[in-house]
Length: 254
Image (cartoon, rainbow, N blue to C red; front, side, top):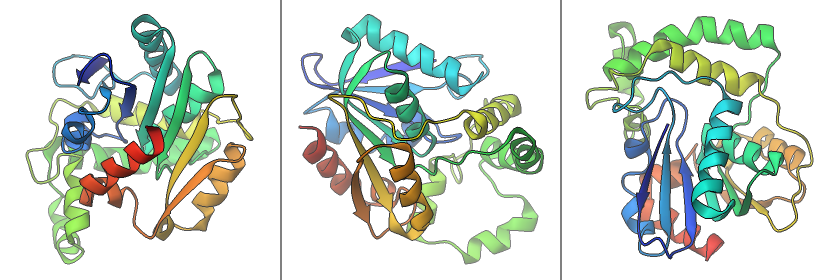
């Protein structure tokens, strides 16, 4: 696991956690310059998803422990904010739930918070992971899907898929085992209900076009979360409107 830092060390710390199978720079490269004038930005690069390491993503809890240790060692266990893109929101939830470090503003970015029994999670992974790994590692869709995906292209979809390396060479260093472990572990790692930590405000960036079931999940897992509703798709604000996203983060955290 790597931690990439930007901005003055004296600024409030914000932790950025990438989405499923996303490279840290492809996920947050556009918004880091918009944040570093106001924050000390720390961007996590998970095991198995950084080209400078030969590692395998182990599981959600092991990675969470590494993040906690880094925050303890470098910031005394306290940071101003953490933003989790998609699966990154699961990490944010776990960091708050475990209470080993303190986050003043814990932000879930359109996270789905899917949870499944073991048998169902294994079945999903068996079906999805070989195809997902091939797409992400090569940066291309299989020929059988190219026509369909071309018809569905929009500026949002192009920008969203670019976080996975689609269209720009992919992420060839990423091993299938890391993709499997990340996908599977997220599905079977439980997040408690009614999480509430004094001094922590949980913010949920709710992309309404994902469906009301996701709003229900936020309200189930967190007690009195602050819901920020956007009439958008999954992480559309981040990928298509980086300046507005950064303004919202500053509004929430400063």
